[in-house]
Amino acid sequence: MTSLVRMLGEKMKEKILVVEDEKSIADAIAYAFKREGYQVEVAYDGETAIKKTLEFCPKAMILDVMLPGMDGYEVLKKVQDKDRMGVIMLTAKEDIVNKVLGLELGADDYITKPFDMRELLARLKSLLRRMQSIVKRQESSEVALGGVVINLKQRSAFAGNKKLDLTPKEYDLLVLLVSNPNRVYTRDQILDLVWGMDYIGGTRTVDIHIQRIRKKLGSEFNVLLQTVHGVGYKALGG
Image (cartoon, rainbow, N blue to C red; front, top):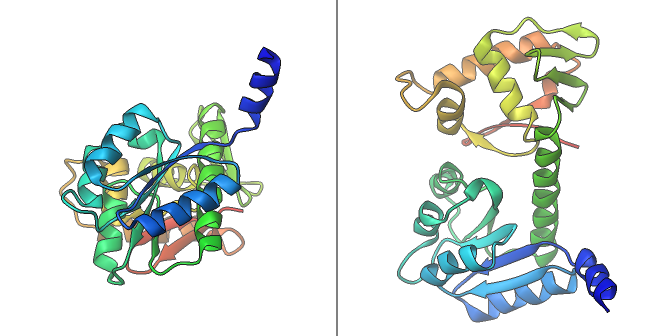
């Protein structure tokens, strides 16, 4: 009996927390995710969502922006272990400012209402694969993506067989993006993570460094670094 329970537990997929105040939408998302084998909990408000992140310990959270009382942005600010939990934000707002704000606060992706459930499922699966890939890379001394190989111990990088002559900040920026394929980083996030919170320069610094890295990568590999217009940059993953 114990072995059977263990086998069933191993087949269960990751825990997902759905935070949405419209019950019909929340229940529909939960139903679709459960059909895919995920363990799902639902919260209809921000306070409950924060409690469930501690009790349920989800691997990912589907978070609506427009919640009663505490909105999705406030939830993002207050949840703990954001680095260990993926976040996809649901927003009815089309303007880029709200999307950027969510990314700035730690969201990994966003999808605009109304959405197709198949797209949300695809986004979730992509996020979970990305997170698993990051864990594997963190356990390794080497990261590789799109023909670019980085040796973390030696702080060296190669595009194909060519060693890249990178400045320390160019190297750190390339490591950040390549280690997190398809994760969109805003310019402000990159400044914080690569240059530090106390950096007083403008976001144009990020653009200049991206341009320099692309030039050093060469025409065969520079497509790896993608511009997300109005938001920031990402490394194109497979």
